[in-house]
Length: 108
Image (cartoon, rainbow, N blue to C red; front, side, top):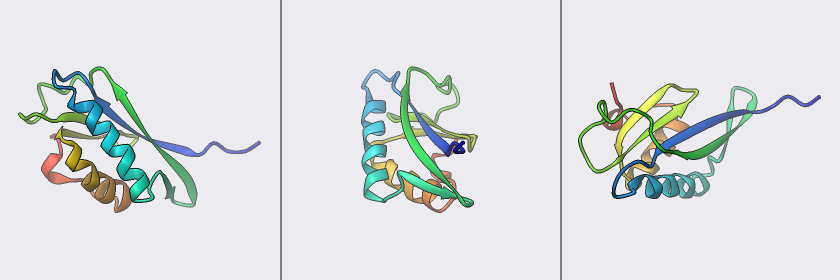
């Protein structure tokens, strides 16, 4: 029996009136391909990265004020707020590529 590979999920809230969440999700997918990080190596095991949209992450009251979307990264238990499409490159490179949180977007 083959062992299942791990999956990292990027949940992007799409409950904004201006639908920026859909644009953020699309930017994540583009950046993952562009930076070659659609599949990661976690330890010695391969890991896939999935971008998934969702209606609400219940982070609105905690989210930084601004026109961006809330993003949850699982299983890392990291939450970003006010994420705009242009921020996807930094999150993919720094968080997924280098294992460092993007402090300017991090929700406390």
